[in-house]
Amino acid sequence: MFALRLCCLIPIVLLLPNLEGARILSIFPYPGPSQYINVVPYLKALASRGHEITSVNAFPQKKPVKNFRDIAVLEVFQSYEKILKEATEDKNVWQENNFMNKFFIDITKAVLNNVNVQQELLKPGKDHYDLIIVETLRLDALYGFAAHFNAPIIGLSTFGTDWNIDELVGNPSPLSYTPLVTAGLSDRMTYWERVHNFVETSVALVNWKLIHRPVQEKLYEQYFPHIAHKVPLVELSKNFSLVMLNQHFSLSFPRPYVPNMIEVGGLHISHTPAPLPKDIEEFIEGAGSAGVIYFSLGSNIKSKDLPEERRQMLLKTFASLPQRVLWKFEDDQLPGKPDNVFLSKWFPQPDILAHPKVKLFITHGGLLSTIESIHHGKPVLGLPFFYDQFLNVGRAKRAGFGLGLDHKTMSSSELKSTIERLLSEPEFSATAQQISARYRDQPMSPQETAIWWTEYVLRHKGAQHMRVSAQDLSFVAYHSLDVIGMFLGVGFLILFIISMVLRKLVLICTRSKSAPRKNKLKNQ
Image 1: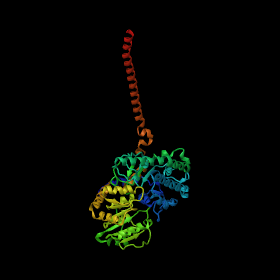
Image 2 (image 1 turned 90 degrees about the vertical axis):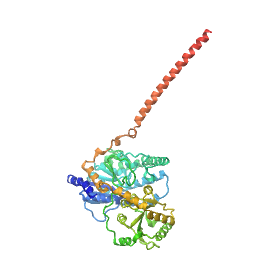
Image 3 (image 1 turned 120 degrees about the horizontal axis):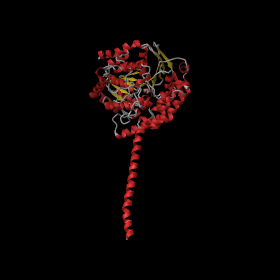
Image 4 (image 1 turned 60 degrees about the vertical axis):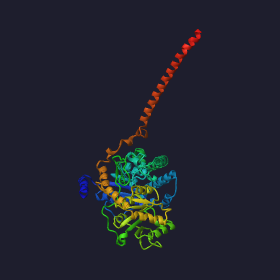
């Protein structure tokens, strides 16, 4: 495996002298930490290769990094706690899409109104960039920076792809086996699940194109007036050089991709786990043969904000287990905490999951956490809250390396019995290890893959040769509706002619039969 990796890295090393350091503008303004955690190792790796990175984000570096400069957009945190609470509330499909799209419009506005963005990036002639890398989370007006700097644009999706991201590069996504991210379905849908997927995807598409894309277009025209009349946003949105996905077919399911859509699932994971802090290492080692359970609800959902009754139920369950529990908890104190529970506001999650004594991961089901659990071959117990978490937990259940529960209704006995089943039945761990082996069996690591393709776009000045011609076709032409219409029209014309001929023949036959009768009556 090492020799294979070395062979794959040789082309990158050989090409490095031919590629001068580029000036790259990255825009990842989402206020959830997990999205930026996913991409920052990749951006730092580009900086270490001599590229100058300017990063627009909500989590600026605490220590200086060579060739890496932050433009902080902390305005995106306004009302974020309220938004997270609203995200877990019940909504119909239309309301869910309105909520999500408005959220991303607010982020777009926050970035474009940021003083430093306006001073350093939006002023014409202020600076130059060779490449734009942007988060593809319905932040369409921000794609205007590509036209503003006359630079190629790369999209990076931290959750995989959906119909909206597929449109950026003309990627086919048949609704018959490509489920909507929020639907919680698999690629093996029943008839009624396909109906459900078709309806939800259609509602999402109509909501975006009729209600929210026009808002993004107005923002684009407002903040990029000097180029909006030359390059419409709809055209700019179809001119991506590359889209990279934080996904891999071994983690989800196989599906078609055009040449400039690349899977880099696990972009943030280091292949060499770092040593754990001393107190955490001692707690894990002291667990003995029973092992350790790691419990985290991610960066958006906070355990301290769970209802008191839910927290007490969790404490009661953990106290009854022979295993030790590492619990990501955002307060320093938790009254009633049993001795077998270790609390911390932050854990080095990938390094903990790499430890052999960690036997189970209780997770909210975020994609980064799911990928990390698979990378390290750990079974999971999913407690999904919103968005793609239901989809990810559903995949874990179907694949056989995890189970899921409803965090709102589960009882202490139900939680304990599910944990005991995951720990006592070897099939869950064995399946996790098997999927881990499939996922790791790649010619290059996800980060190496992302860097190679990024520099490929730079070497080939935007790599327009990878762009599929579907991006230049209308909806009618793409789906051959005009061709089908022509065949239907010709078919109807032929049927019409045949029917008219038959009608004439019938009339002739009728007249020829009636003529002798009339003559006969005349003669009589």
